[in-house]
Image: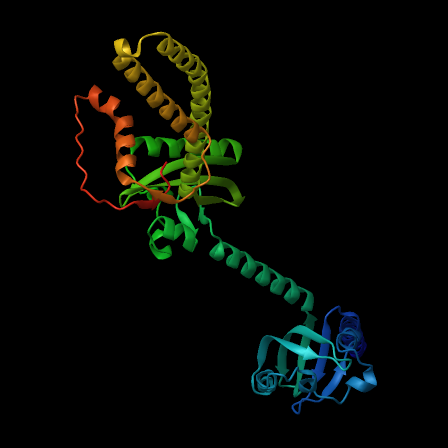
Length: 377
């Protein structure tokens, strides 16, 4: 029995020794920093990983306080660390300043061992993770500013066709608030029950699912005006998230219409110039022959006819001159003009159209009308 008891105690001693050796090995070779410190905050023991994190030798590290390493720009950090003396366990993340001035974000787990009257704290350097998170936050903030500040309307929506977010430009285009729009169907933004518009939008969605991108143009009538919108959508921008960009092209459409009218006027002008030149050539010949004929005949016999023909030829020539002004606008020259003459010339141009509609134009001018300083044409 004595031999058995001796063997049992020896085996227990070997197990305890092996256990102690295992704990020592784990402590020394652990990848995370492990620090033991007393009730006064003094460091009692630390492993190699702790020395690497805190940029110290064992002699420099032992005896110091962990609170000495806490970055004190904000005094709250030190108070946060000092309270660990009064709680049995904690898990925190603080900014620490190393002896060489380097700042590190350390995540730590601390526990008080009451039986031995000391604290054990395990540190892990999370500076890289913190920088990555900060970079992501900055990137998200930049994207948010782009989204909020874009002059084009932007709408984020999912494949349930529900609006996830909308920027101020889009909310302004569709006369709604961001709070009212979020969660509603994207079709509600169309502000119309026009069946054709709804079908075109469904066709837009089908094209988006097929090709990943789609364009769509629609117009909305409101407040006695028609607004034109160009929609460009990008599908699956992120998981189950689509982006639609809305551009108000009303002014661009108006400008295009003005350019189209300008082109039409240019064509009309060129046509007028061509017609005027084509008419003027035979007109010159007619005037010449009329003059020859008039000189060869007795003036009193057909003077009335010759006067009418000459007068009408002069009138045709005046109209041709007006055509050329239309074809090639002249530099504006303001002069004093008799308003009665301008009115008579204008009525002369309108008389033919008036007679076609059975309209007679009669004029009456007050005596002593002053001249008008204007461009007569």
